[in-house]
Length: 186
Image 1 (cartoon, rainbow, N blue to C red):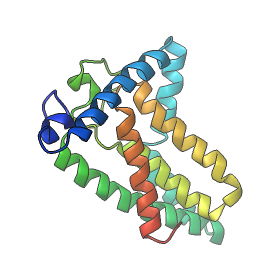
Image 2: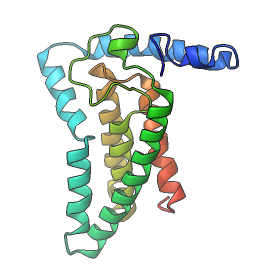
Image 3: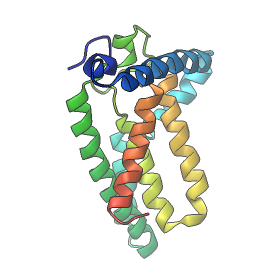
C-alpha cells in the first residue's frame, strides 16, 4: 500500500515519469477542487451528480433496462450491465494493487462526502457511469452525447467533492472504454 507520497513512492526509482504525473495530478486536484467548492448549493449539485455513478443507481438502471421487456432497452441494459461488471472488476483489481490514498489522506484536502473506501486510484464511480453511458449509448446512439456529458460531470464531481484526483477519474473512465471495447460494445 502507498503512503502519503502516492504513486511516486512506488515508482520513484524505476519510473520518474510516474512521479511527475503524480505531482501534476495532485496540483491539478488542488486547483480544480478549490474552484468547484463555492457554496452549499454547488456542493449539493456535485453530491447529487456523484450519486449517479454509485453502485445503487448504475446497477438499478442497467437491470431496469434489461428487465423492461422492450428489446432495445434490454439490449442497452445488457450491454451496460456487462460493461459495468467487467470495468468494476478491473477497477477493484487495480485499486487494491496500487492502494493510492484518497486526497483527504494523501495531501490532507478535506473530502466533502464520505469516501466509499480508502483507495483513490482508479475511480469506481467514474468507471461505473461511463460503463452505463457506453452501454446505453450503443442502444440509443442519439443519446450518446448527453450520456457522455453526464459521465464527464459525474467524474468531475468526484474531484470537486475531494474524493479523487483527476487522474483517478480519467483512468476509471478509460477502464470503462477498455471494457466496452473488449466486450465488443464499441
